[in-house]
Image (cartoon, rainbow, N blue to C red; front, side, top):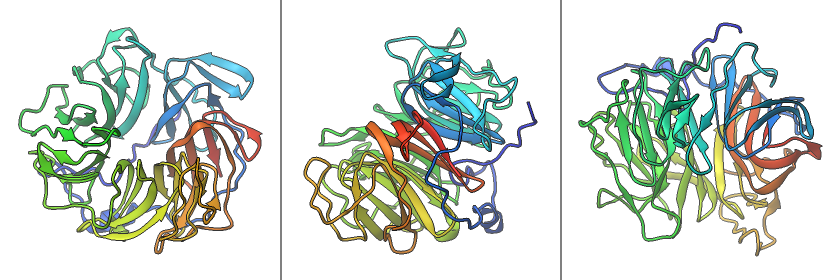
Length: 402
């Protein structure tokens, strides 16, 4: 396998007191401007079950979820038996020679919800008790170059939905119980105040996503009305060392059942793009103070977001229609208003004003939930979730548009 060149993932991974990143470095890391990709999927390998998250580590795209086959064709083709983890060459979508695909098993219906790369490690988190036959409860660290389990990291984590790798080999982990920090050895970090979410709605409580802010703080998103008993809705900004909440909150009306599902942090734009379920919308907020820039309605949950770098931002989700611009109400998938534009689980919006990009409309034939994960690298859009065709071409659960 070719040597993997380690890249940063999920915003700018800086931790106060651990690493320093200048504004010039942050701006230099922005994806260059390119046109939106074609609407038909490339000829890639795929999997046979739901994909929950995608992550890149150098030239490799890691695919995680709930599946047991990695295959060359939607109907089968060449099949490799796997357990909830697969990987492809990020440019070709084909298997990577010599790369080990770890088997994640154990417990009832094991699943990998999230994957994050940083500090030379690839972390996976979800619901499982074993990785390659070694005991690992819900979280594990892998060598991104080989796919092998790192024995140096052993944690006993509660049920997880999100992980964020830090530059020092440690990891932030969140789920239905709390958000916590584990050291590079897997020990629970006692200096970090665990953040316990609570909510009065049926959507939570849960931590659904974690990302670094450009100043090294940690953003966390999910379904919560409070953290540790203090009022804080949907997204919070935390001190990366102590875990204490910053004086920062989202502006505008969040809706009564809002769930922050996925974030994309863009320092050069002073932008936090947020995919929201429950109240169902796509939005852009100001990184510096949380002020709302725009919010565009979707008829079902927005579940994934990636800035494409050409003046547009892509949102995946569980919707079948989106607002042509902010302020237009779409209703629900069951009871649409008729005022919105058909977009089946994938849409692009202008980053400045939230208007729908009208000439780009890949048709995703969903298996209920649709697109759960998006990732942009090298002018290509990778998507994962629950679907069986893209633009009428059979393509199951993972696809690449280029």
